[in-house]
Length: 224
Image 1 (cartoon, rainbow, N blue to C red):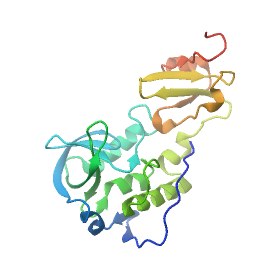
Image 2 (tube, rainbow, N blue to C red; image 1 turned 60 degrees about the vertical axis):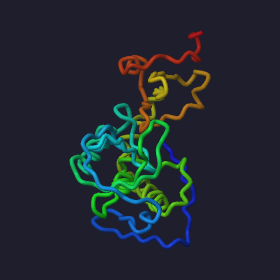
Image 3 (cartoon, rainbow, N blue to C red; image 1 turned 120 degrees about the vertical axis):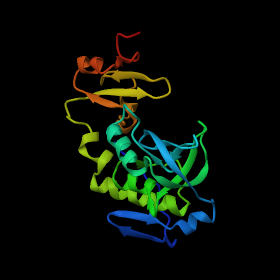
């Protein structure tokens, strides 16, 4: 899995410290934009989404955790988020809403940034689709690069191609929930990117792919 990171803006004074392996974002910067509120989290959905006691569904802003339950280390990412927020009185900084009606937010337990912690540990990646002009996003983007270099979590060998001889690409299509595998002689094979975080997998045999619920792609020879 290869992520292409945008350039981190320089020359901006970031007020962040490193304590116990985690970086903390200066909450004074964000409070000027949004008024934080406090509430108790009651249910964790996956590695980057959870519910509050008032029914609000929170989607952590600026990061992407492995697609649950398909993605590599997705169960571990969900468990880690539970450890960080479940049944805790946390601070929510609203950054808007997504297309699913979820509140996009920066989340804190005291001074600890939950978004930042997950990226630092490799339990989530920085969402490079977002323009990193926000001070908090710049800090998370830097943490993501450091996690990649250190091969933590989703950047580790656990989420890369396990065996060079296992060349069958299994693609999990989130939109339709379908699972399709492609062999090297399939038409679109070279265009397919295997993203274990999103639920894609490498397979050593067609039998293995079939047992995992993947069907042969229609663009493979003999399938049309």
